[in-house]
Length: 71
Image (cartoon, rainbow, N blue to C red; front, side):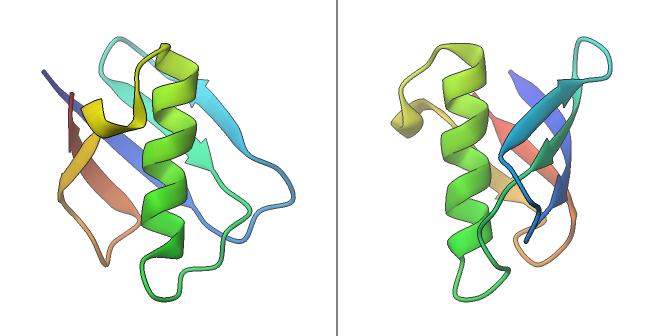
């Protein structure tokens, strides 16, 4: 299953907002340096969906705020 995420790094808090069945807005505290924000997006989204972090993987958009994630 693929979902579409709009990421906001360096936010004040970790937060996930579900826009519809396949679109999410994810805010993370981690800065967009050395992949820290990408790791945080995967972790926060997995926690929101009730999955293990290893089940959530960014497949496209590693350097963009718009990402495609495979579950």
